[in-house]
Each structure stands twice: as structure tokens, then as C-alpha cells.
Length: 222
Image 1 (cartoon, rainbow, N blue to C red):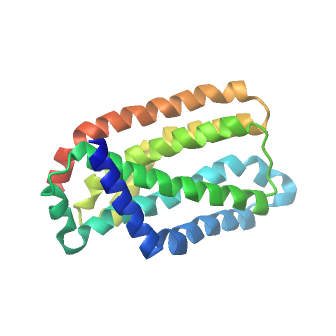
Image 2 (cartoon, rainbow, N blue to C red; image 1 turned 180 degrees about the vertical axis):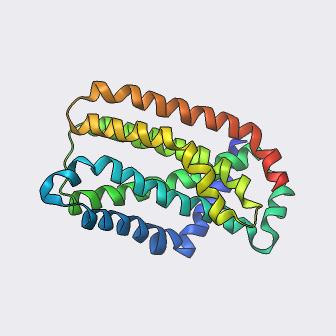
């Protein structure tokens, strides 16, 4: 299973490196979202600084939708999805590989967004360990749920519009938990943020287990 996961993750990441879709489209989109938020909120009023955690994770979620759609769009061309079904790869391995590739892309994106927040919002933080743990747990949750719902929407004609409707309500606990944890870190109260990190970890673990068992039948149906 883990060998198959490595093969799928490496394949997807090689495709992204060669196509540069993430660099040329998804990353600029995420930075543009941050820039629009900066224009919409008055930085002198202090609202922008207080809203920074929420704006950061909203930009991550919006960009994650593009990354997830892209991860399954590459399988739709030239009958690649049928080839993937007939490849003999473990469905759980395919799921974990897709999840790992999306996780890696989002992790790189979050680094870029973090730099953008520092430059555009002049934001600051103190609980870096808590922020790092939050990013890992939240990104794992987004990638695990996104991979599962991505294959559900992949076989539908309206997948571009259906995926946000399916996924965003499911990811609301991730948005709430990550924002609360970031706020605790920025306010110097890490003790209030770690329970939220625990919630994010449980969410990611639950969806990873569910996806590992349910991805195969969903792939066949798609």
C-alpha cells in the first residue's frame, strides 16, 4: 500500500512540477485573495490585523479547491482514470498517494501565504510551534477530506461547481479549529490553541481511515 502511495504521489508531483500549474496559477490566485482582503479591510482600524488568521485560512481553503480539482483533472484526460483502475494499484495506496501530493502542494502554498501575510498585513506571531502544528494537522485534514470528496465529484459533469458545495461545509471544523489555534498563538496563549490542534488531528485521522477504506468503491463509481 505504501509503495503504491509513493508511486502515485511522486507521479502527481512530477506532473505539477512540469506543468507549473501550481506555481503559475494557484499560488498567484492565493496571493491575490490576500491582496483583495487587504484592500477590502482598512489596515489602520486594526480589523485587518485581528482578521489575519481567518483570512489566511480562507485563502488556503479557496486555493485547496483548485489543487484538489487539478489532482483529479489530470486523471480525466485520455482515459487515465480507467488506466488507474486497471493498474492493479491498491486503492488505499492511490488514496494516500493523492492525499500526500495535495498535502505537499498545500504546505508549499502555506509557506508562500505566510510570507504574503507578513508583507501585506505586517502581521506578527509568537507561538510558532503551535502554528506549525496547526498547519500540519489542518493541511492533513484538508488533503484527506479533499481527496475523498474529489473522487466523488470527479465522475460528474458539474464537478467544478459541485466540489465546493460538497467540501466546504465538511471543512468548516478545520477552518474554525485552525483559526482559533492561530489566534491563541498570536495572542501568546498557546494553552488555548492545543485543544484545537487535537480536534484537527482527530478530523484528519478519521478522514484518512475512512478514505483508505472507501476510496476504492468511489473510484469504481466515478
